[in-house]
Structures are given as structure tokens and as C-alpha cells.
Image (cartoon, rainbow, N blue to C red; front, side, top):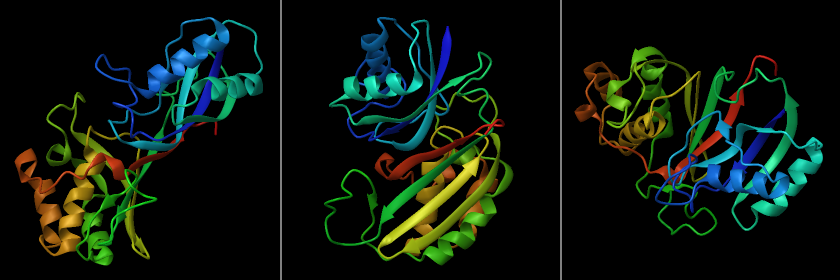
Length: 248
């Protein structure tokens, strides 16, 4: 048995999320079926993170266990062939020790959220960014975001369907910057609650629009109440960008 670590890039638009779903296509299903076509083996994919419907990934780390002898490069090439036409690509493939786990060995995850701050309709970024036509103050958004950095109870920014046992998380970084018409929000932590990033972005957008005072983000956090959430940003602007591991 060989454990292969794969780095996936995918457009989440046509999927019902990364995890296999009974009611629609998923990234997990696409990759597992491609592995079976290559190796003749039914496998289970394990991922560093769980992404919702419409969320994208630039470098999602996953692993599968395969008994058939096959070189990593050959497996990667074969998977990319069989994944077509699904918008999923294997960027890298390597052999890992049996005790390496894409999810449980991961010590850090990073996401990026893209806001297209313009009035004109989106063409190239359609389904890949959240269009906000109102002018956004990115500097005010960044200042407000710093209240969320550190160890906190993030109940306000947690989906009611979140299955995590503890709402307390440590947010290592939350930064907002403008690049032309784009407002980019970068964040990193060991782990996140369900909808945490999208919920934080939604409230920061309210600050950027001038609908919330900067201090209201801290007040919403302190409330520890989902009812205090101002806005949950849509999925299409969210990207999983990196998973960190001790051996890397």
C-alpha cells in the first residue's frame, strides 16, 4: 500500500462541495473515480480542508492509498487525463509515509477571498469573485479585521450547521488590501469553523461600505451570537490557497 499526497487545483462552481454528496457532484467523487479508472481500485480521498459548494482551491492537499505499483508522475498524468472535463487538476503527486495524513497532519490552513469592487458586470471573474458595486474602504476593513486576530470564541462567525465541538479558534492572520478594483482578504489559522471566513468577510464588507462602524466587528465577536452577524459573504469569492505540514 502506497500513500500518495496530491495537490489539487479546482474550480468549485459545478460542484456541491469538496466532500462526496448524495445529491450532486463533488471534487472527492471526481478524484476517487479517476483513481479507480487508473488503478482499478476503489479509494477514499482525505483532504486538508472541507470546502462548500462554489468554493475554489489553488492548492488543496489530499491523500489516497493505492496498492497498485505506480510512479507518482505517472499517477499524476493519468489522473489529469481521466479528470477531464471536470475543472480539477493535480498539480503535484508524491509518496508520503503511512502515518502522514492530509487532514490530521496539517498544522495550518490559508484562505483568500476575492471581492471585485466595480459596477461593470464580471466577465473573466464571473463565479470566481464576489462583485460589490459600492465603493469599499479597504483600509477601514483592514483596521476592523485586527479585532478578530488571536484566540477567540467565534460563535458569531460560525454556521448553525457547524459540527466543530468548540467555537474557540486562534486566527493567526487577517489582512485586507486593495489591488486596483480588487479587494483581497487573506487569512490563516490552524483550522477554521464552518463559514467562518465567509462570515468574517461579510462583516468586513459592511465596514468597507460604511454601513458598519469599525468597532462593530469587535462588538459582533464579543456577542458570541450568530444573530449579531451582519452578512455572510457568498462562496464564489473564496479560495483555499495553502495547507502547511511539519515536514514541509
